Length: 134
Image 1 (tube, helix red, strand yellow):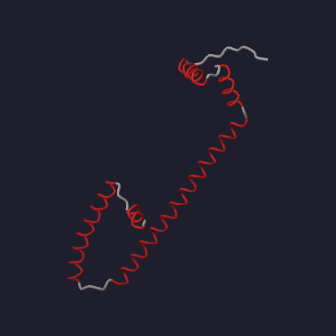
Image 2: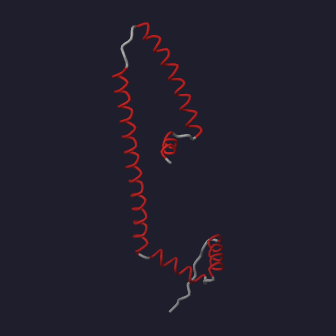
């Protein structure tokens, strides 16, 4: 048994309801009933929880990848420093000053290159993957 009821809705909602009714070929009452039943259904809370769970799972996987990548980066940096310290010979104070000046020059060039690559969106990761493809 259907009971007539009067509901007040904003004009834009009525326009959307009219457009959907016209596109789908379904009556406005049928669309409104389905929407209200969906809203009142206990399944809607379960569906929202399932969607939230899926999003949290995706975020968790992304964080796991970030943690893995960061660990790799830290290990690469540590191994580089360890190797550099092993193979770099001691210098006299005159050589040390010259090396410090050259090091500052190289560091400035490195930072400029890094800034340019990042601003262009060029990442080494993409280049490494491209080099590995046959």
